[in-house]
Image 1 (cartoon, helix red, strand yellow):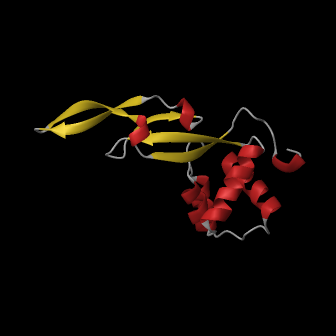
Image 2 (image 1 turned 180 degrees about the horizontal axis):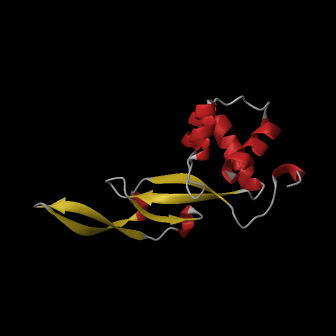
Length: 133
């Protein structure tokens, strides 16, 4: 539930607090605080991608969220994650099917798709915008 409370605190400082339906509150509460995407926030809150990104990036600047990046294998599996793209490994091991068997394949990270995600910074203990806990 901490993710829900944190998001509400951030949103209330950026824009008038949206009235969420019970279903939206349930969806937000089910987000994994260790990994969620701008699209999750956008969809649940019914805001634009730009507004959802602003909410997430504000939380990063306040130390409430951490921005992370993941590199994806061609099949969509996550091969590695890091705090920045520069800290991703140069190569990753992915798997592909060959003659009905899964075979490992080492691929250069620079050629693979990357995706940004966020997670709740459990260690921060900070509350956004000088609010008291």
